[in-house]
Image (cartoon, rainbow, N blue to C red; front, side, top):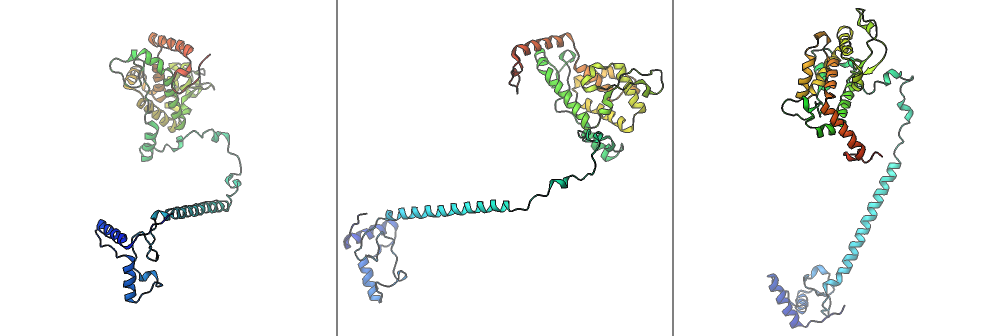
Length: 345
């Protein structure tokens, strides 16, 4: 870079301007520095610590008083920054590589054979109960704090309640009820999902022993209710329409009279669960029939059956809505509904 030489007058004027701009006295020119240093006994070969450091952009060690542009040093600073950054990156990569090497050097996980703690296979009857979260044997005795906790867990209401069709609602409509024909069409599928959620709760709480009904084709003249039934199985949650009200009441009577205390507790909790999960309108309609049932035939099974019958009540209005839905489904396909992307061809 080209350099410029300043005479003493220009340098002195430059010092005065610089000193005035910063509110500081200007430094004397380099010639006066040398004279002052000679008077004090210093020489030019003394170290820099004996010299007054100047903030001006010329070097006092330069006898020619050559002016240097401060920007000359910037490329060197930039190179130093890049070198420092490169060293830092290399150090980071080395640290990561060291961590990876240390991970590979960790002791090996013990063999999977240590997980096989049983010497014999479990019977299939025990494996079939993996869906049960609370077994009947763990209900505890009525009146205990553990019993109340389990009952609360088993009977809390579903997020979306069971509802009824609009023609059964006398006044206000609660969430979960079918308030119009269009809404009936939209809830034909969602109502089945609610029943499925109830069915899942029954599995988790170990209620399915009482929710599976046999056919009432045994010896009905016997005083022992165990003689009334055959060996068939009908799941009330999925095949309620295959059961008769007489069959359901007889099964509820058998539960109340001859089943274990845990099964009777399951019947009570099932009743509370269905009741809590029903809208006010649905409870009102179910109560009209349930209250006329003899007390020794009341319980969770009877209440669930009446609830399902009421939910799927097939009035002329509901039938028309279902036919309309089926025609729309045939023309538009399943892709019309949220979360689906397929159509029927």
